[in-house]
Length: 125
Image 1: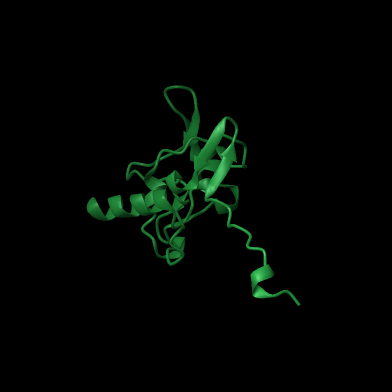
Image 2 (image 1 turned 30 degrees about the horizontal axis):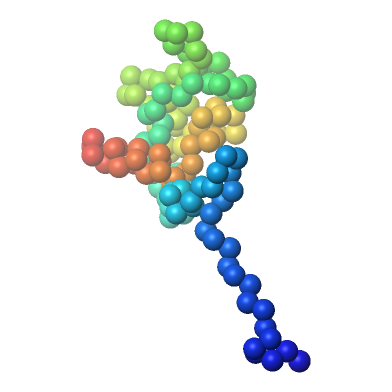
């Protein structure tokens, strides 16, 4: 049995991350934002569907939902109301969800960009 006076105290590591060329204090690194899990696309006004979406990769988006912009990039077509052509206006759900562009796939539901677009949609309504 080890007596309390014989115990070795191991110091806790300092809150720092070693990086090439020095040390970065993690106190200065902002924490990654946590998405708001209460938000779902089912109860949203499709605010993100009014954003300009460039089709960066091939995901199977049907051509009739796309257009070519002034710089030659393929983008999602937006109709006169400003919403994406693939948005079902009755349900406010994407009609090509399984084939949506990469930018739409990476737009995190409940994340900072989503919250900002939702806030903007309320401010503009």
